[in-house]
Length: 237
Image (cartoon, rainbow, N blue to C red):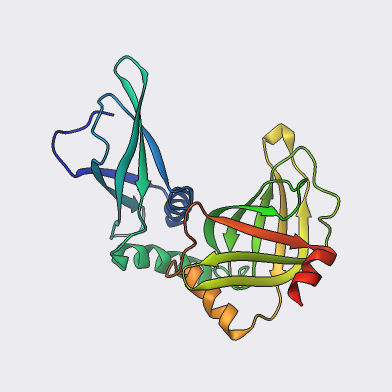
């Protein structure tokens, strides 16, 4: 990528769907930034403005970023690590969310709006696999599980608890595992687990809604804590 002189540097990025845009946005914000390749070096502190656009949404989502480090990987080749900041202007973000909500409302198979998120998650034990919270709704969540096999304690009917520290407080949503999918190595697909949330206290339901609309976010790097079975029940007390 060639970079123009001066700043801030403005880049346009297109996505095929609002879900893909939001998923990539939350992945980058959750990690604390993005890494991009460049044919030119720039000073640390250089500011970027990313215009994120999606098919079917007129407004763009603008994200500001600041270059944290510059690494020369080969002569004339550089990698820039850019710290992402959550969008300050919500007009484009609200338009993307509205489009996702409208798509879900027209799908009779969906009882709740699923918002694509990318949040790393672990259990509070040394042998915990790495999880990826991939989608979230008022009704539940979907988890990817890294590893060659599905851990034996992840079974349908097992209690489940997810906790995340947001800017508005500690989110704790409880439920149970309602489906599991074994990994498919031939297709490169990880194991997956679906959790249905139980009846949440009003404060927790409000906090979850704020996360779904990105009005309240975790501090990067985003991470969630999971518990299953007896451990989940113990932490729910």
